[in-house]
Image (cartoon, rainbow, N blue to C red; front, side):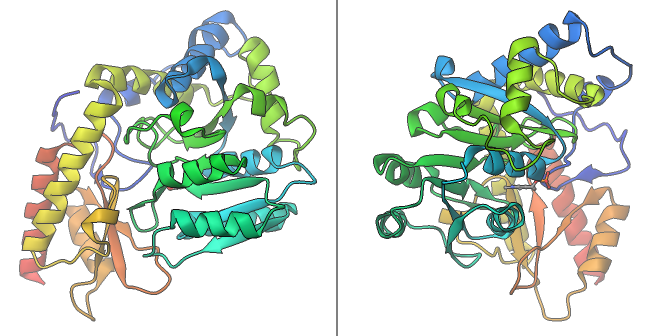
Length: 370
Ligand SMILES: Cc1ncc(COP(=O)(O)O)c(C=O)c1O
């Protein structure tokens, strides 16, 4: 994928999804498709499932994938509600809004759970996780958000995975804003269930999400679901047999996603995409620092996905800053923290170092006028 500054959208989305997509991905949505024939089920849906498995794990034979209508949260709910059996107990490691949302899901659907809760700027600790697991012997499943998009923190997935697996628990990773953009190998880490969505680092359009799971673990989920529509197992069984979705499939978005997966390959795979996102983020953080903005997180905790910046002064008006940046073609993201005034800028999507430089010029112009 190469740099193309073609202003065929009124603005660039510097947000963590929906994000800016390529022209090819958008064009893939410009016609209608039949859903019941082999062109779609075998040619597109099954192909996407196979590609997702190899994207997540070098041990492709051990894994399977299921696509699920709805946004990322629908698949988080489907996975938690279908993977944890009635006599199971979930430990949620939470240090942001998406960990907290898992706790709300567990509460709502009546899952037995406990939390290892941290503040939004603290990273989970592997030894602490081990201690929590050793104290709570009844915990059967552990859920962790890989990149906490609330702040942009990259949680220590491999250290936590090692602790969870060495203690014989099932690991559920929310890799919503990391799969496709940050290299990791689910098979090597022993991840049992991994959740992500169409509109994050694979750079598709929003509309569905998916779960990549160890085939053996998925097969154990029959009858666990607390919901008819969000039954991960039943959706998988139907899709595994025929490539069919149980209910209406978001055909346009599925085709866009198929195209997005091909573009990921053409770019050079996850390693190349990670290198681009990392470069975007470095330009962003260095440039914002020069303009007087301080990042919320120290560099060692910062992901290349999204960066939180503190308001530069108490009376900083984010609404006005946002509007002026939007006029100049850049949409930024408000903060999502409970106790600090921040805003966020994403570095993922069809966004290139040149875009970051143009965005910094706009910030410079807007703040000079403030
Ligand atoms: C890490 C993480 N988990 C879960 C979600 C929820 O996804 P959605 O907003 O698509 O429901 C998001 C959304 O940004 C996310 O970043």
